[in-house]
Image 1 (tube, rainbow, N blue to C red):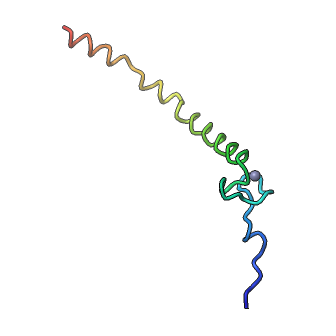
Image 2: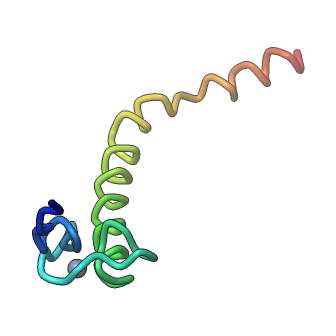
Length: 72
Ligand SMILES: [Zn+2]
């Protein structure tokens, strides 16, 4: 009646190292180490994009000009 559940389904492997079974506290990772490592790499990529040259392009001295006009 009841089919035997494959071990891979019962205990999913860590999404990062794919070696150790997932720990409930750190799903979908096996440990804090793997969770931190994955988050770290993700954040690094996000920061690299956010801190790109696009930010510098918007750094115009427009506000400084406005202030002088208002004071005048
Ligand atoms: Zn892992």
